[in-house]
Amino acid sequence: MSRTLVVTNDFPPRQGGIQTFVAALLATRPPGSLVVFASDHPGAAEHDARLPYPVVRAGTSMLLPTPAATRTAVGLAREHGCDTVFFGAAAPLGLMAPALRRAGVQRLVGATHGHETGWVALPGARQVVQRIAGGLDVVTYISDYTRDRLAPALAARTQLVQLSPGVDVDRFTPDADGTAVRARYGLDDAPVVVCVSRLVPRKGQDVLVEGWSQVLARHPRARLLLVGGGPLESALRRAVAARGLTGSVVLTGGVPAAELPGYYAAGDVFAMPCRTRRGGLDVEGLGMVFLEAAACGRPVVAGTSGGAPETVREGVTGHVVDPRSPAEVARVVADLLDDPARCRAMGAAGRTWVEERWSWTTIAQTFAELLDPAR
Image 1: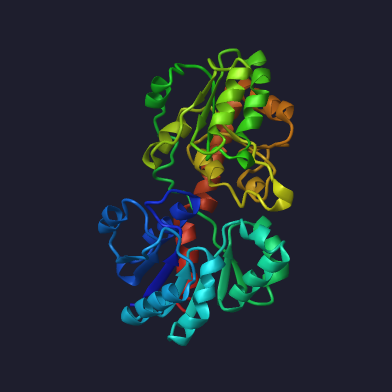
Image 2: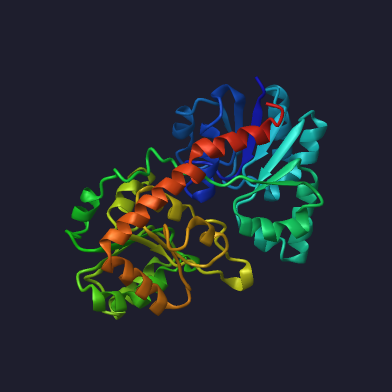
């Protein structure tokens, strides 16, 4: 059996979108075909003991392409007979690629996740990413948006192939039950707009709060459920209090990943008006939350940042809005709450689209072909 060494700084139990993506990709592979070299985090030993493949942890919480880490990766590739290496994030760990190729690895694949579009926009960082790409057989991208920005710098140096995150359509489903979540936060049968994401400026929770009074003017019983933790939490709580919205806006803090389907299901509409910041350096690569919400049968409202519009079929599964206009965001959200039948139709269309285009069955086939083109 062909064996793959996975070299990644982003791996559970550390939480985050890239970590979830990498772990889900590996779950699609035959267990005996994998060896993982990852950074260390609290709870790693207990987590790794449950996995069907070996995980070797570096003695650091940040795995970098140092000489010592490269020697460990080379040693693991030789020890386990790995003919393929997959870098969970190509930059900067892909700098290990030449040493691994000299050690006999036949194929090297590196993933990108969106932030690399900012790297290639900066001269010094662009040269580093170009060097990495030149050592890899394939660099993957998650959306057309990210490809369009990576290609001018990288296409002449390596093959670019789309590898987007997938949705677990058996877990994120219209049958998910939001009753317990509604009861926990006293939402009763009120119309609920939900946003699931880290609380950071790019995601646009502040825009939802700023426009929420306009939603309440049309739907006085509506509730806004902001799910997630992050550095913006204190500022959001202050903004909610200052606007007199304490009774209608709920910040849940971080929640266990296993409970997320119930949080999506607790909403009637999903909204995250993400926006690009810092001159394009802080951008939404894709936006899996929109697809998870759609898989749960909810209409979605997305901002225009990066690849986020690619997760929405405009007017069919939801709407793309100007994330810098709280008034527009509020109007679109209120319009959806006006028409429950339209919401249900959009949710059903979103579910169908996710099953056809974004399920892990489709993504797993792409990943398998990337690791072994001859299969």
